[in-house]
Length: 167
Image (tube, rainbow, N blue to C red; front, side, top):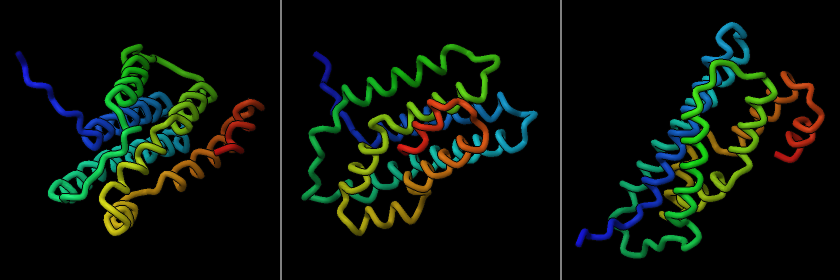
């Protein structure tokens, strides 16, 4: 009988952040000839990649804490669900995409549970480690504001503009 592998939320959600990064890198490649959009998506991808690295750094910092308590709402099932959605999108192979569609996908990602779970994971190590991790990377709130401003700049779809106001 195979030993049951314990779900490590920090590793699991670091992988999800890397998948989000891949989605945004794909967008940057799809808009190669539109410099501002290309650069925006490239930076969003870098930020997400950095979030993954921060989660792994957090894991290393807290691995020996005796009082580490994982939040029960951070489950393997939730990680698998988010991962499956991102992998499904990536497996489609998108030769082209409209600007509005890229922003719609980004809004779905950024308003998913990822940010809430990411915040919980960073706080696992306590306030000092949480603050250190925040200082190492681009906070999700800053990233959402960048998305909101870019959406207002590049999109005309009224539904997307309304959604941007809720970020």
